[in-house]
Length: 158
Image 1 (cartoon, rainbow, N blue to C red):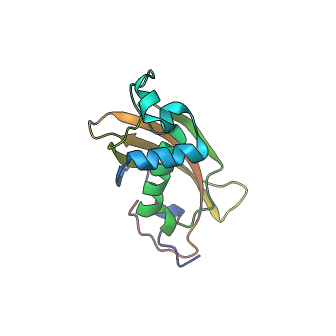
Image 2 (spheres, rainbow, N blue to C red):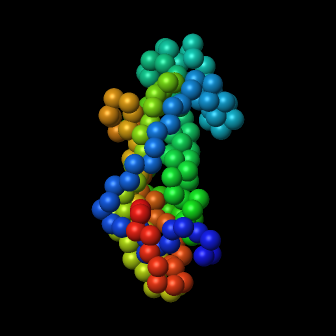
């Protein structure tokens, strides 16, 4: 585990981190939806025009997947994580449309040591995604299990 860059000790509460940006294409929306959520407003641009959304939109799970990708690319793949046993307060506030740019943000809202596993820490985070107009389109609060560092060294970057 020492090959990981980040451990539980490296995460700081109330420090918002920019996760990067992602541009979603119509082709990507169609491919994801055809495979995982084939509702007409995700898969048929013509029918979607007559929907209450007024056009094609990404599936909410696609939006979640984009946020996950931003987290993995920014730090999660370098973190000694055991995954997330829960995601609370998942909200899709506005649709993600073809050509939209989603900016991701991460903030640790709470952290504590595990009572039952002394080598683990628990982090409660707030994830938010904003479109190019600055409107929040998605929020969620995952709980992550992260291994503690086995020696006294800290990166304090995230």
